[in-house]
Image 1 (cartoon, rainbow, N blue to C red):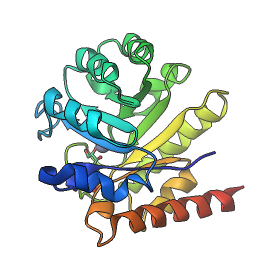
Image 2 (tube, protein in one colour):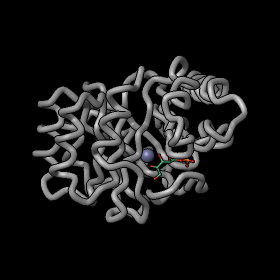
Image 3 (cartoon, rainbow, N blue to C red):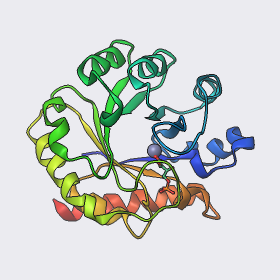
Image 4 (cartoon, helix red, strand yellow):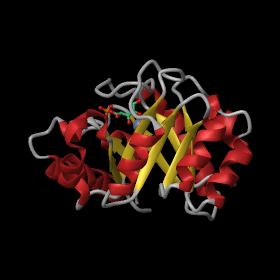
Length: 224
Ligand code: DX5
Ligand code: ZN
């Protein structure tokens, strides 16, 4: 199993994103881009135009996390413009199977996200289709919130389901991931870690990415 660290730029300086991304690009697997529409969540980040520019200029792969209501339409648009991975919330989609196949048709990996109150069972019939499952470890909408350890049972449920598939499906956690919590999430079965404030509030973002990766890898080796 590989470990992926995907820094979220939500807490980076939006006026200097090129430089903020450059700080972590060499050490990170993908950049996590949080798109919020102020409808699905009570916060707004980028419209499609602004997000397209970030994606086009990003020196490494982009992992788009869509927290938008109109995701059955918008999800396809993000796949079309070269996102490596497009994740939508199951709570927002009317036709998740179709959306997964449309995202994949455009060459992107398709991810499905679960809010803290959404149980695993809601997506169990999608495991054979998706490329990533995102278990939120905070209520989506804002960076800097506390890690919800009570979501680890769900992470373990997803891990058990993924282990019975031969496909390369990633298990991402997002919210409150730091040097204090990444080992807990790794033990529960996560392999792909979003970290926003832990990385960008650190004095040395690149070194923080390295630290997080080392902690997760070490924990993974202990599990073997
Ligand atoms: C929250 C976003 C996260 C956020 C994480 O809704 O999906 O990606 O940036 O921030 P931290 O790591 O500070 O919890
Ligand atoms: Zn996110």
